[in-house]
Image (cartoon, rainbow over all chains, first blue to last red; front, top):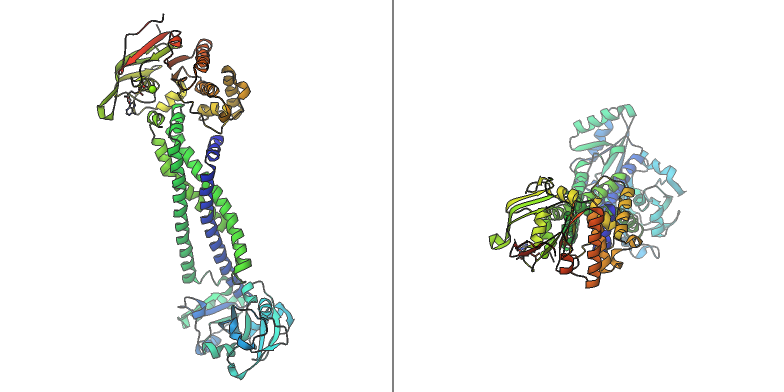
Length: 381
Length: 226
Ligand SMILES: Nc1ncnc2c1ncn2[C@@H]1O[C@H](COP(=O)(O)OP(=O)(O)O)[C@@H](O)[C@H]1O
Ligand SMILES: [Mg+2]
């Protein structure tokens, strides 16, 4: 049986290969998007977790952390909740490399640099202590902590002074590199930690999020109390930050689901076309098989197996392509901002997509083939 | 007295919504192991008759029994063909790319046999048709006569009662065709398998147990072989 199925691919090598590649490209696209979305989610989770905080508090209605606002009054209120040991306020901005302007060190790279605003007296900054590869933690507002990738891009080293923001915020004309850190997250390494008050000059007085430290046994209660006292805010365990960032992630998942459907339809059309052509070219041969005693059901099975074979082979190739493509994308185009995680579920998703494509795409041709009247099929020129 | 292997009574078959009468109330009985030759001009209904007798198609009216089984629509015609009947066509209808042996094995694939059992049977039949040396050659590399011999071996794979050959030498030159005819005769005598052969070769027809001549969907008077 297998020999027969494989022989069909030999007869129609070119077309089989084209169809297979079509499925592979669809699957590769989905695998790549899924890997990157999981990677970004995981990296955000581990970023939050690495803060060492028990809870992360942010704006419930914000579609993205970039739009989250927690006011100074709310921070004060947080501090009064029993069980809250400490809070660390954080804000955030992004600057373009070119903002360095004429005063940029020679050859400094372009592109977007995330800037994480922290208070140097608060607990959150201490997480960098163990990540330092040069220098020390910053203590003054005019000092910066720079990720190792950002340091390379900006071509600066510990002790260097340069006008980090074009505007002379807070009257600081030059910023000094206090230390250089390296974490596991490439986008954090591409970033710069600046004093939160400097960022406030650009983004206003509110904070994007607040890290809350509690004793482990208090965490659940504090979380409930934060949310009941300040319904505008949402408090999440730092380790499950993105799991609970529902709206935004549901949106991404829906988007991927939609893409999967589109990729699936493209794949189904490819398999459908290939198998329809194969069935119509093979009319006499199928009539012969029926004359020799093959049942219509067996013919149906053979066509479905053929279609699924092409599609599954395409799927496996697509998983390989997806992996390699993502790695290439990360290596050459993402400049470190994208992160991928390759989960078994992602590969399974790609495989199932291919399987469904194969089954759906070959079902109609298979039904056509099995409905052929053998006597008629043999008259076919 | 045994029942005949095939009994056809008043089988009628029309096409094109009744405009073309391909078989006009034909009746026929065929004994097991016989060698029947069918001749007649093109379009006289020979292929239609084979299709109906070979459980490929059902008559519009009339009855067909094969080995006691009624052939009618809604019945498992595939299974009757698989168990009782073999076909050899004018065009060999072999599957390119596959080897001679793999082609011969095709009718047996639906059966629950090991590949070794299938292989043994296929090689044995290729031996019968004197092609054992080409068993592992792709059919693309075989001559027309060799391909037709592979097709005959394939028709015998399920050990049928009756093999239908529809102008099996129509695409071959005379001397190759004669060899095929000799082979069919030999198989009929040796294996006791019945053959129904559509042919224009009067010489061969004269060797048959019976000769049926068709015209306009009916038999002309049956001739006893000379
Ligand atoms: N499936 C079909 N559809 C329409 N006409 C058919 C079909 N099969 C056979 N015929 C017609 O029936 C007649 C007998 O055909 P056939 O049995 O093939 O003759 P033969 O084999 O003797 O040449 C012819 O007129 C042919 O055109
Ligand atoms: Mg004919």
